[in-house]
Figure (spheres, rainbow, N blue to C red):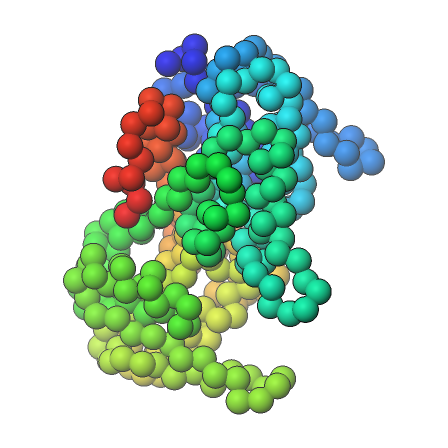
Length: 313
């Protein structure tokens, strides 16, 4: 296995890559990935990959364009070095929210990113909690779409335990939240958002009874945290006992940390698909769970041509 599989990583999330390698009991292969003074990215693969099954671990998180280009250039270097198969391990897929035309004359950038990856030589993609499941259809190659649900649900069962109610922060997340509620055998509530007129704050209502319950807000990602914090406020006004929030991807841009610190959210639980930096890393309300074991198991099964479907829960 050591001679046939190679794991590389760009600069997006080296701690996660190292943890995946530790789970697989494999070394992280050497590649030099640096930036010239004019901003150009340089990549040099530091070992022989001829005929190898190569996995490149690179979430396309902030700065998105830099990390995306690192991935693209690394894959091209590996293909030119005669790697047998290249799998892009992208726990967080950047540009995922631009998955459809929402207005005339706008791009579908999630599709553009998929095409870039395929053109340079990616032959398989391993992703986690895509913002929209249909992004899988943008690829003409196999896509293994994992979910952080086993990791997040284990935390809820062990740390929150009783009087749980799962809450979707909007109508679009109901299917995801219902799946958690079913697995945990708890009730479901929904935050109803309505914009009464243009440039006027949203009116929020709770559909479901959260009184006396520990409300668990569930979303695929938290970016500026505006929706999540507003939802927490309305849940507490509806007499919820406590409010937790669970998200797969902690983007946490702009005023997110200030909003979370000043919000009614008791704990924001995220995964390490995106590394925390600066104020986010120091925020006491944020709990980070590791998905390295989940990704390592998927990589092992892909390499050995075993079924990955049991991980799609």
